[in-house]
Amino acid sequence: MKIADAKVIVCSPGRNFVTLKIVTEDGLTGLGDATLNGREMAVASYLSEHIVPLLIGRDARRIEDTWHYLYKGVYWRKGAVTMTAIAAVDVALWDIAGKAANKPVYQLFGGASREEVLVYSHASGATIDHTVTAVADRAKAGYRAIRAQCAVPGHAHSYGVSKAGRAYEPAERGAMPAETTWSTEPYLQFAPMLFDRLRRELGSEIQLLHDVHHRLRPIEAARLGKSLEPYHLFWMEDPVPAELQEGFRTIRQHTTTPVAVGEVFDSIYDAYRLIQEQLIDYIRASVVHAGGLTHLRKIAAVADLYHVRTGCHGASDLSPVTMAAALHFGLSVHNFGIQEHMGHTPETEQVFPHGYTFRDGAMHPGDRPGLGVTIDETLAAAYPYQRAYLPVARLEDGTVHSW
Ligand code: EZ4
Ligand code: CO
Image (tube, rainbow, N blue to C red; front, side, top):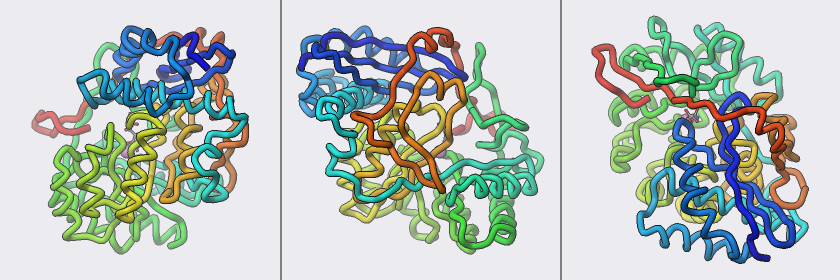
């Protein structure tokens, strides 16, 4: 089962996606997502210039060997661009392996560990009233777990708040990144008020999540976690930037609010101390940015030893190919926690027809052979790439801050 062809497809059905398509001599095709939000063409070129020539003629069944050939063989290890490129190859090969076996990918991972994959949706608003309504709407749509974000009064640019009537999409097309401002103290005072209202209006059953998006320092995150304890959040996400894993000790010493981290992690090496010291509760590393299904399953296996569960990133910049892969992973992995489900635009859904389904707050990858996702290349070509950037954040005095 030799690889006969591989190509990179870049399209923009509402937002940019990079997709790797691998074809075998026997005519099987596999898809892998290679989208790195705001730096898409770096991965596209890494794949087409450096990896595609290495794939032609390789045995498509040698997934583990190919992973190490690309990881160790490059000499320059890790990094978001490298790990996203490796992930695209890895996921495409698992797609092919499923098709060759005529089984959905989760059946190659030991089968289903559960009947469904619990997902959480997003809700946001410009005011607490709007946010309460938005969360209630998501609950009506069937979601049992909802991430709530709200603009801090006087600070229009709080993270995660959608522009009126539009789905939240942080990357903006244009020549330069948008600039937003951030102020920590008003946020720390405001966040408990938001969750107090949400609990009083929506009750205690619904699972509430919140994304801090790397904005705080450890002692500030400890204060936030403590102030949110009465509202028993499912998790507080990315409370601080995680380059300094030790920083989480301070948070842990002060609060029982569960902590989730890792959507920007590229491998187990970003997380092993967090996991081994049990400084986090959920690991958010994703199929697409952490080396594909092969490496994410190893991260989950390490996490399982330390009571850490999975909570994979699933924003709109992770394509339907990643969503499908995440669902095969989530259905099968023992220590699954929750899966983010932000959803995609109708244009994106048309470009990537898929077999996964949503019902009553949970998803299922479906039982088509492989991942169960295809790409309509003709339609994709109608949406050419457009450069887009994630915003940058500054403090009120102009200092650059984590966005
Ligand atoms: O800002 O995926 O939890 N979800 C998030 C996302 C990220 C984007 C960055 O590309 O934090 O919305
Ligand atoms: Co996040």
